[in-house]
Image (cartoon, rainbow, N blue to C red; front, side, top):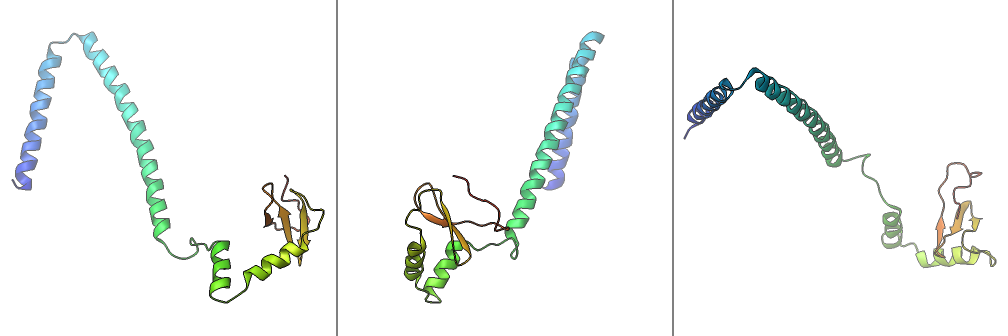
Amino acid sequence: MDKKALDRNARAARRATARDFAERIAGLSSREVMELRTHLNVEGARLRERLSEITVQLGLITAEMKRRNQPGPTVDVSEHAVVQYLERILGVDTRAVRRKIREAIPPEAKRGDKFTVDGITYVVAPNGRVTTVYHENPDDTPYAP
């Protein structure tokens, strides 16, 4: 069946539905017609509100899809990737770096303590692992155990 035939069939089906509905409401009292009209207005408002919500969600999804498909500044490189590159491509001995940091840990350091080595602030995390602390202002206290 071609598109024109499908359109004709769809229009005919809508006309038949409208005729059936007109025949059904012809037998209703004025009060029943008003109740039906009120009900349809409420349902229409609810559907318009839901359509608005769906339209907003669709816009957000579309924007996110565009953002994900764009190269450039939206792409970030993790610290782990940098370390792997330094280690495997540039040949930096990360074991020596780890050893140097371990040697710089004050002997009295306990979990939650901060210390600075070569201008980098380190902290002994609650799990005992030494990690770095990022902060814009060196006088800030970025870590609170």
